[in-house]
Length: 115
Image (tube, rainbow, N blue to C red):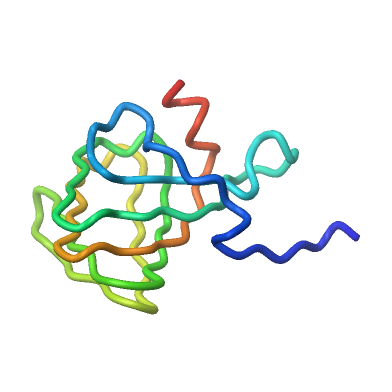
């Protein structure tokens, strides 16, 4: 069967590439599976932030906790059930005051652009 179901337990969470913060990511689908997108989970520790210019189009779904996402144009707050789209080329700062769990989909695959 090609259709699959995943939970956060299926992801091997590791430090986000190039970051010192307590931010972990783990793909469950990526270029190794032959599809056009990366899909996975992210865990943000309490009081952590990540600043980067998006190298890929990234859609993040907040599953637990809250995040703020700031750009030059302002800041938005997101909590459980919210979806945040961050287009390629956008400079963002993602902050977590109390910690958060997210799911994400990127196009194209994010890992090759960070390796």
